[in-house]
Length: 162
Image (tube, rainbow, N blue to C red):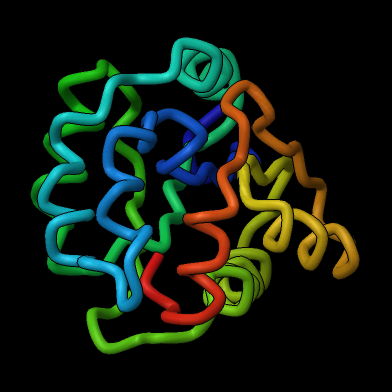
């Protein structure tokens, strides 16, 4: 099967394969210190369950990374994925000036992907993202191996940064 014919596995980064807990301290104040939050991302420990799932999915899916991280963190994100031995497929990131909530940004990106390719599974940890995408009919798997922190969810909704 050639890669272009394989269905897509659309995977989030933070909370799925990257453990962000050490960075959440930067978002506890209002407004959050987003520059420090993203600058600390290269030190994220990998989440074994997510990494294993991505490797399993990559056997018969083309992996597309869909993250709310801003475009300016592309090089650091790409490097981190490679350091973890993860498949380096397409990396879709939020434009630097995009302040929509993660669920809205990801819905729009998924609609673009789904218009040209079969999306077999979407993996995300954010309950708001998961609920919206499921309501739209997308096949979503919620990453529950890391307890979801309201700190990140609240910051995403109010400040639209990841």
